[in-house]
Length: 239
Length: 239
DNA sequence: AAGTGGTCTAGACCACAGT
DNA sequence: CTGTGGTCTAGACCACTTG
Image 1 (cartoon, each protein chain N blue to C red):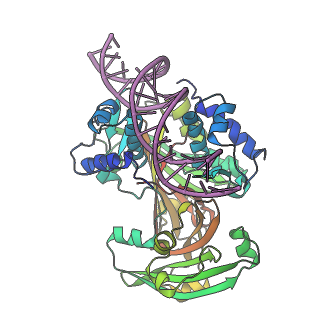
Image 2 (image 1 turned 90 degrees about the horizontal axis):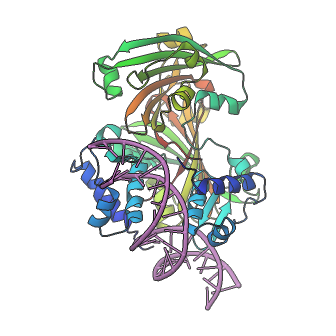
Image 3 (image 1 turned 30 degrees about the vertical axis):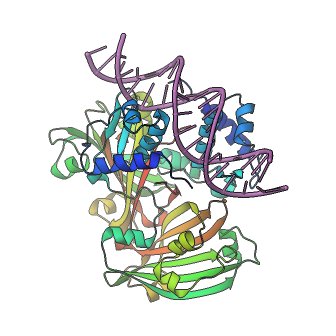
């Protein structure tokens, strides 16, 4: 895909905001002004500005202008679509992944409903625990439709399944639905995690869709209570 | 504000999807086709389609078309910006709100940082418990900047603060940042909630901004573990 | 090659804020 | 009144998918 013209504009403005060239509380140049500066049309400038607003860097106010927000006070992942690696890197922690299981299974009743697939499809089943600073605090159970992912190796699972899917297989992850609840710890949780006295885990169910709108992955991520944290940044939707 | 032209188009398409006039898995008419049908330009049609995609009704695929998604299998709140009333209504449960405290306070150190306000501002402090089917399972602690909300009554707190803010005061809530963690139950939690044996609560911190980019509300929502549920629908962001 | 969605443009009018 | 962002238009070219 050709690089969008508004992306370099977005990046440039983002840099300038993060380096305080545009200061929090003050306003960006007007859309017409920016269109001139970047030698582009106003609508294209607006796409860059809308992205900035979407990602929490500015707040647009009709009739006034685009106000620069205080980025340092609001450093959140834009939304929950990040892999464990990305999250860990941001935290600057020592992390390790243990692969406990990697198998190809026939779909059972419950899973076929979760994945909206027919009962004769096969799924990769991956069970991994995640260590942060030496403690096993997250248990990830992934189920991936085999017809989308013909091969899967232990090495890939230890590194990053997302990387493999997006960069090696060139599948595009498009959107995901998340559900967060708290559940009683299972025997498997107690076995594979360092739970200590905790009797519950935070359960994050994740439904991942490809860009052709097909569901292809279901993931259960089970977190020790005291190490769980989720950040969400929501705009009011219109309509 | 004048009604956007793309909104009625969005509503019409949404209706047709929910009434199965456009069937899941099949495609919508092309953008050019729709532009003709609704007697508008293609860019305007695209705004309606982008809204549909954003809200999970369709999935656009370049070169192919807009695929209708199965709405029944994915009925989620689009994102976490919904009030307790709205959530409860969707659940079809018997709900009740108890107001334990409604006072005007001087900002202390911790809160002034949370609200990014000066120490001499005053805040409304509202403490409410929420009953669902007769059990007190949620404790909401709201802090609202008094300079934005001159008056606040017990009646408003029992009904819906959001309603009052948006419909009576005509302030527009623009976006919110959420943070979800699990914490030890406090004495106040034990006092005001029916916690049973639970020693923890799910803590949802909520930072609410108005459309002029000012933070005006900080809310702590404390949920009993077994009654907590959060659904999130995230699109992959660009850039 | 034809049709699809993705992007870009130049220009227009509107609603809102500050003067 | 001027300047701001919000919307809409008509037309153009591009990249991708399908026949």
